Length: 208
Image 1 (cartoon, rainbow, N blue to C red):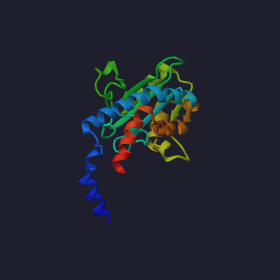
Image 2: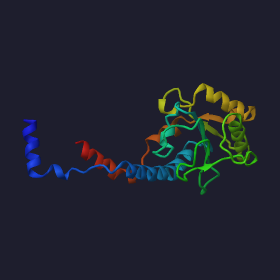
Image 3: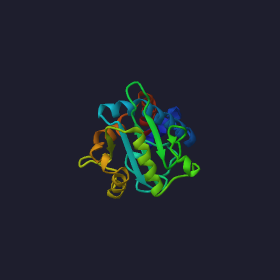
């Protein structure tokens, strides 16, 4: 019965009307634009909603935070050694700073933070954590949100080892400012932008 129905559809030329997905390069361009919109629209609103003046997402290569892949370009395969993204809210009506310590700019969506005293070379190891402390000292955030959650796996991406490095790098003066980013990380990953809906509808048409 199924094969006969398909035969009828093909004979009627209806199968030719089924839309197709664009090539992978085009898909990456579309996803990159979605990333830009989510970082520019959704992230500031969520950071302010959850009172996170700074959000730090730190992870190692092949042990990425669940939030990592929603924060990077679709062509990024993995974190680069240790990759640290810092998001800082300087205040109302101002843009959220997006800083990358490790990795690249993700197509210009992040400012790559380097140490001018080290000839702007790629940072790794202890120097990376020292630069993070320098960056935080320059901005003096009232709260530093990190991905720790006893409830949601998608908000629990900071490993014990990375947390120990982070706390040691920031020092005791910042200990009381570190707070869980439980709902910030979760809601950022789940929240879409309207521009994504037409493509999602097209995908569902293809699946059906």
